[in-house]
Length: 155
Image (tube, rainbow, N blue to C red; front, side, top):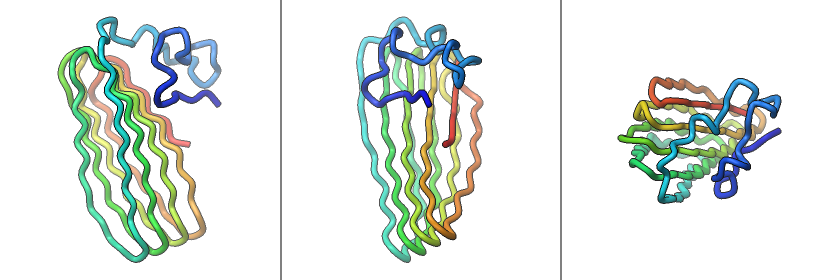
């Protein structure tokens, strides 16, 4: 499986390309803005403790000429519940490269809503890795209506 690594896949030579079977319909090299000058790296962790209920909204805003590398770690403990809304917006030509790691403990519940409305000049990649334990539930609604090129994978 080809992965986009948080800090390592930032130059056009190491990006996945159509010769990789899982990326045969997505040529990231063509979508990558030519004017990227700055790198912005962030890590966000959401940890919902046993038996807690949490509703949270995360807003991510892209900036012109910036590579935004974001790792989102989500842990939902036993019998806990999380409702998360992620919103992506921005202006100009930029790259949002998001990796989301989700761990759901037994009987955990997670409702995941994503709204991607990034600028028409941007590139948006998002890979979600989910580890579920017994009786946990994961439901998702993803709306991708922005970006010059957008790819969202769930594993």
